Length: 424
Image (tube, rainbow, N blue to C red; front, side, top):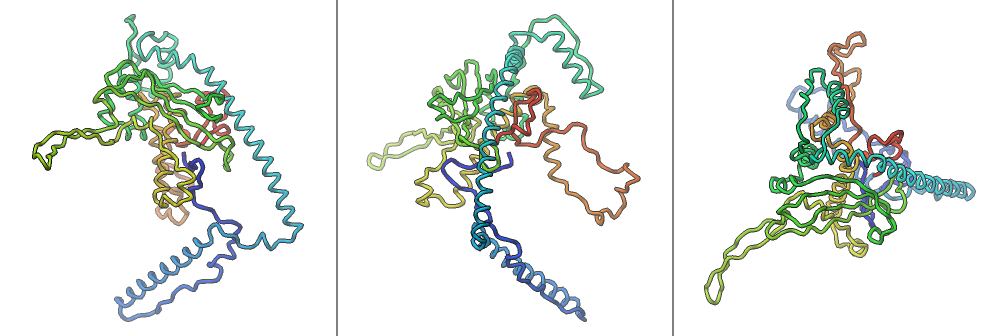
């Protein structure tokens, strides 16, 4: 997601300018450009003068930016100067905006119900997928044929797999591979985590029952990781629930409230979120030594199930946190929510594309787009982009994935428009 995730009970994001017309900004006062001599017999002096001019321009720009920063969050006085009858019209427009917000909230609620409907329709497909992945069932000839047609569409040189009547075979490390092929999650999975994630049988999506006390009456969704018996923890499944605020935010989308994770019941000496070190200690009185094992937190994918905790209102009001600390907390919330959204919107609906690596074509192309900028006519000095010639114009790949971080209805949700029903 590209937008900021507000933290419940706080207002960490920077304030925005309020009614500050550009004509009132310091720039309008006019900052004369520093002048330098036009002619100089000494080129070195010329360069020094130009350097001095650059320094003066930078200082002037810094001064303007500093003054503008001081205006952030402050009123220009324009609204206060309006006649009473105009102020009443402004208040009336605010009232209309309130009604619009109420309709937007209703619209998003209905989108959420539509997502639930199509997830129920997709459930048999997900159950069938799980059975094939784990080898309890084999794919039908129709399923194989449809898959091969898609493979030929993706790659003209694709060679169909020989058919046989062998018994169903599980796909080893399917979910570990799929998670590894997601750019963001790959950074979270350590070598130590792989042993546990090899036991991952399925990743499931469900929506919260707002009537349950645990969810405080909030809408949201849940990601469930199902495991086979393993040597790392006793849990058969690990869950992560994401709660939204009751009403949509200023942007018209649901706003992240908080997350709830499963308490992992680690087996002895198997906690992957901790590292152990052996230290030798000496008794000051008896001079005897002993070995002590100490645990310390370490990076692990399984920290995902211990979501960040928002600061309390009391801590915020008391000034307990510095601005940099609050920004760090907000970054952690942003990352935590983005992982949940990517599991919900990308990995679960398109697990086979992440397993095969096809999904990476979309992710990589999105990253490449950020490396390009539009060219002005003056930039095209070599004439490579003439209207009559396309031979040297770089063309985009055939497929184009959705923008990264964008929420939406579950993939393949019939006629649901994910742009309209996106959640952030």
